[in-house]
Image (cartoon, rainbow, N blue to C red; front, side, top):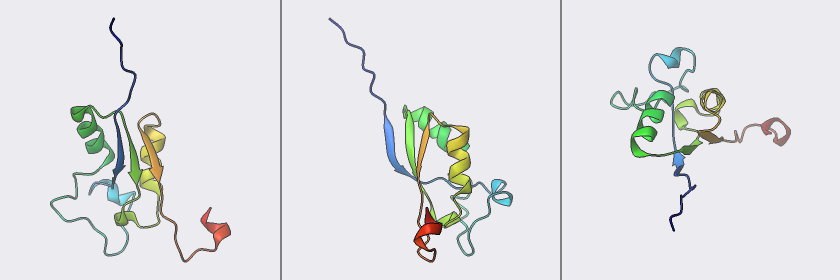
Length: 101
């Protein structure tokens, strides 16, 4: 008797940030540009290619420091690929609790 696994492979912690070209639309926080060796290696498209190559079905994106409290790039990745990505965002401690939600 054979059984078919329906389990998915999920990466539970990774970061994604705008490529150099994408940073025009999704700017990095002041002083948070990625090192030149990594600048174009963590975009949504790069991540999807690496996930496909490794057999990873989905991922939890943890907000990177590159974009600090601007979650628009992570939100764009989740919106464009809702079956692939979920996100964990950062709370800005300077915000009042009612503004942070």
